[in-house]
Structures are given as structure tokens and as C-alpha cells.
Length: 391
Image 1 (cartoon, one colour):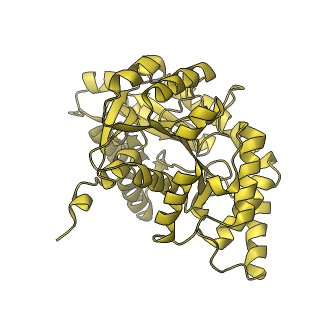
Image 2 (cartoon, helix red, strand yellow):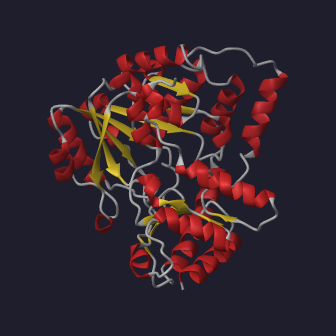
């Protein structure tokens, strides 16, 4: 009955964990949730007020399929001001979230049977999007000892005659990886040498720590910029996950193809959300730094508590708001019959009412992902429960 493409798509483990945790909460159970992929702050007031104003003024109709011109111009100005990148508005598309921009880019570029290189661990939706496009996901092992980064030599080894593109996420979900300028430059050299495309997912660009600076790989040269589809949005930086506004920047041919897909699928992003995004990008930025600073304090607390549990360990995340925790030592020594991140997460939720995301969702069952997009109180309470669970 169902189309073959649908049968190949896996259920989101992340959503399954979230659903079970919500069911337990509805029964009055005190669940500590570390599964959140979204900031726990309110959208800044000036952005909310701009949306109210848009409604009051009747800005509730269709916009152009690529997004309203003034928002695309604001994005172009932002990319030039913050990233050193020169794009015209016709090289930018506004979409219903960065996730949909990713989907459109993959659908616009990947032919059946072509290969898409994905560093592992990876964000859960990348391989599924490739499947929908009838491409083939090829994984590159981003090793823990290299802070979950791939090297230029690893990339070159994996490229075949069928390789169409690489998906790179920095700062990354789930490990908080941030590539240095030198690492990005070396990767860009391989991309140009092998003449493949790059999707650069930069949705967490403003959430970096310890004085680190985000550098967009597209800014290294005009040649790598032509091979790059830059993906970003307002969801993480401005706590606007529910507003569903993302964007992509690329050469006009690719943006036009993505626009054709968008015009026949979603038509355009919500007009009110676009107006709110315009205020987010063009308005005061002080709340972004305030949230980033709080996230850094939470990261330090979570990391200290994790590394205080002998059976667990974690590489310090340099960006985003996740800790990717190594549980392999516990899996090897426990006597509870727990043999994977799936059974670990399931038993932890049942026995200690703590929700985490199994690493299997990201390509490695020796890990679990914990989000520090929650209060310090919850971090302390939840990690104490985890310590009890593994002790």
C-alpha cells in the first residue's frame, strides 16, 4: 500500500524518547528531560512584539516563494557583516525551518544512487533525507580521540566516482564539535580537488564557547563558496524553534531549484514568522549573548558532573548545547543486561525517570546524548540520578 520510499525511513528515536517521557509526566512522574533539541528560553520580547505588530497590521498573506525580499536582504547583510560572505538576495531562500532548507538542498542536488558523505556521529535526519532522495549515505568515522572531527585524508579516502556532496555540521549536533579554521581549510581543499558539493549546516553558529569563533567554510575562497550550500536559521540562536524559519545561501542555480521545490510544497514560510525573523536578525543581539553565556555555565556544570562518574566520560563540547557521553565502559561491566545505548536509555527512564537520547540515533550505540538546554537544578538532579543508576 505505502510507497517504497516511506518504508525505508526509520522512526525518529529522539521523538520516541520524548513521547515516552511526556506520557510519564502526564501520569505525575517527576521526569528530568535531557532530550531537548531546543533552547529553554522564551523568544526575546522584541521579536514577539514584532510578530504581534505584523498580525495587527494584516501582514497575513502569501509572500514570494523564496521569502519576503526585505528578509532576504537582511540575511545577505548579516552574512556579509558576521561571516564575511557576499550573497545577493537572489542567492538566498527562506524556508520553513533549517531542516526543510536541508531537505530541499538534498532533493535539488542528489540523483538516485549518488553518494552523500556524512561524518558519524551525525544529526539523526541527515541519512533519512538522503534516503528520501534515493541517494546513498556513506559515513565517515569522526573519532572520539579527534574530538569527533573528520580529517581531510579521511574525506579524500571516502570520495568515489558516485560522491555528490559532503554534509558538514559545525558546531555539531550531537557532539558540540567546532572545526578550526585550519581544519576547514584542509577540508575545502579536498572538496575543490574532487569537485564535490558541500552542505554546511551552521544552525548553532552563535552558540560557541571559551572565546571560540565560528568560521563559515564558504568564506575561504570564491571557489569553495560556489560549491557550498550554507544552511542556517533563527531557531537555536534566538530560541525560535516553533516559528519555523531557516534559510539557505548558494549559487543562483541551486537556489532556483530549491525555490521550485518550495513553491510546489509549502508555497512559502509563514508571513508572521518571517517578520519575526527579520527583527531577530536585524534587531538587538544582546539576548543572544545572554543565552550563550548561560549555556556555557550549564555546559561546565554538566561536564563536571558527568566526568565525576567513573563509568562515564565526555569530550568537552565547544559549541551547541549537548554532551555526547561515552557509556562503553558501563556497557562492558554492568550486570543488568544492558548492552546498548537503547537499553541504557530505556532502563534509565523506567528506573530513574531521566530521559536521554540513545547514541544509536546518531550512529554510535556506545554513547548517549544529554542536552544542557535545561536549568542547573535539573542538571544536578538528573546527573545525580544517573550516578545512582550506574553505581
